[in-house]
Length: 89
Image 1 (spheres, one colour):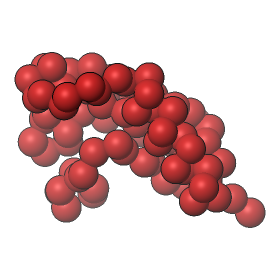
Image 2 (spheres, rainbow, N blue to C red; image 1 turned 180 degrees about the vertical axis):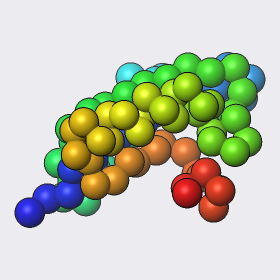
Image 3 (cartoon, helix red, strand yellow; image 1 turned 90 degrees about the vertical axis):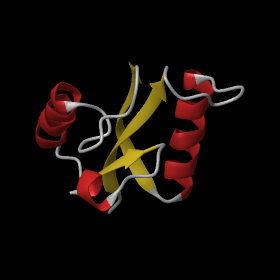
């Protein structure tokens, strides 16, 4: 049985990523997840000024993702960014 995944694409206004297109990045993340045999149950895109050090996406957005994990019975959350050990927990 496939793992159920929530995908999170984040664009930070305060960080320059040449040619970054949120929609393109979200589509690429979905394709990579499908190739990893994940069942995508939700695809989220967020815009923020800068990364939040402890959570990457901020407390409110992290709570929103957690609520979705519970309601959609997701097994994994996949981000389009590298997460620190603290952020992964």
